[in-house]
Each structure stands twice: as structure tokens, then as C-alpha cells.
Length: 362
Image (cartoon, rainbow, N blue to C red; front, side, top):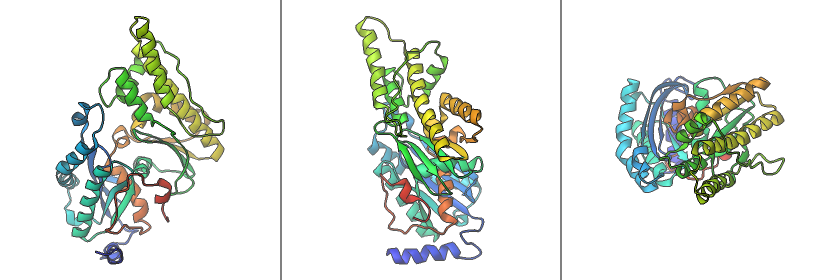
């Protein structure tokens, strides 16, 4: 089908019967950007009727990280089953679905393709609009599932593949003001966890050990240029490895708990100080924490304390909504639905999709 024909098709589907982009509607969302296969059914972008997540952690743990080809195959095996389970838990039928959303990017190309093909097939079969959605927009708007977002807002995005400060001057408009220049926070956690002899994914283990530690190995903070909101964590990771090697060269056992605490405090100091500085500079009315690492207890507590000190409202999703999930994709896709901004059937998976370019009205 040509792009022009499909544009007419989705426009017709969106306005068929009593529905319009401003009416109450049911959206089925699909997320397959990495190693979770997730499908959700959400009413009006906020009321989650089902949010099924099938994790591949046990499969990838033996390799110490995500193997892209294996992830893709697992998505192929799971996607139909997870769609059926999401529909069953929502207590609806597929014919009740008014639109289909899917993570278009960023992510692993093979994994993304599975979700995109499934979403296109459903959109075509059900004759309903298709909405290609940005994965990070999903993490940010996961906050909209638990409370109202007040603009301008600042989102601190911390995940396995992303560490960014995103300014939202208005609904659905994203401006990245800072990003990591090397490792993302989650990536750094996993690499340090491996050095501390924890299994993949290691972030929760490092967080727990840091919380329990009674001593701390003080590690460097990478602030970069005085006016920069960018991040860098590769040097911190190297500092942890250097401390372990130094202890072993002396014939001593490394103090893993003190190292975990030192590593976590360094990460938290840098991301929270920069976030609070940006919040003040841009005069935001709300702070949003999002991404897989937003489940980190130490980070949640520190940011809540700092925001509380200056009276800045803070939203943090529940732990289930911090990880990759389809409900967050539905929350972001709602931005496009309400404006009638639908995708055509020539939608492509884009592993490096730009968040700013995905903004509404783009």
C-alpha cells in the first residue's frame, strides 16, 4: 500500500463512527526495543487496563548482557502470546481497539522490527490508525500515568542506554539540554556490577550493596565544563576497576560494599546536581525522573530530598513503569492521537530515532 493510500486509510479509521482523535478510545501499544516484550491496552492514554511484560533477563544473564539476535528471536516467539494475554486481561476483544502504537525507536534494530511488523499487521487487519512512538518519550510520559505533568518540566532520563536531561517547555515538545558523552548510567552500573562479581543486570545489586555499606571509597566526580549539562561515566567505571586492581596488587581483598557506595554516590551527585542546576536555570515547575535506573532507591531518595528542599514538585513512576513497558508507549502515543498525527504503513524501525524530531507537530 502506498503512503498516500495509507494516510487516507488511517484518517478514515480515526474518524469512523463516533470516534475522533478527541474521543474516548482504546489504544493497544507494543514495546520490543530491547529485551522485554510488552503489550498494553490503555484507555484515553492514562487508564491502564493491562500491561503485560515478558522479560528475557534469565536468557541473557548467562552471556552477561543482551545478545541482540537472541533478543529478536525471543520477541518473535512471544509477541502473539503477549498480545493475546493483554487483550484477555483488559477484558476486551481486538475489535474494540481504536489505534495501535509501537516503539519505532531507538533500540536494537532486530528487536524493534518485530514490534513494528506486529503493529502494522494489527493496524491493517483492524483498519485503525498506527502510531510510531519514541521509546524515551515513553519513559518520560510514564509519569503521566501516575500524575499530571506541569509545564515547563525537566526530565532526568536514566536508563541502560540513555542518560539525558530533557526540557519540556510545553506538552509533547522535547529539547535535550544534556546527554552522556560515553556510558549511560545503567551501562556503567552493569559494568561495575560485573567487576564486583554480580550477575546481569547488576544495577539493583549495586544499589542494595551501596545502601547497606558502612564505609565508602570516595571516587571522582566528572563535572565536565562549568556550563555543561552533559555527563560522562567511563572515567568513574575505570576508577572502580583501578581500586580493585590496587587492592589485589597489595594482596588485599577489595571492599566491594565501600566501592559500591562510592560509585553510587558519585553517580547520584553528578546527575542530581546537574538536574537541579538546570531546573533553576530554565525555571521549570516540575521535575520528572524516568528510565530503568529511576527504580534506584538511592537516586529516588536523593532527588526527592533536593526537590523538597526547594519546593519543586517531583514525579517518579512506579518501579514497574520505570522498566521498559508498553503502557508508557501508550502514554506517549496519546500525544499524537489527540492531534491526529498518525503513521503510515511504510513506518520503519529507527534504532537512532531523534527525540526532538519526534515531538508533536514535527
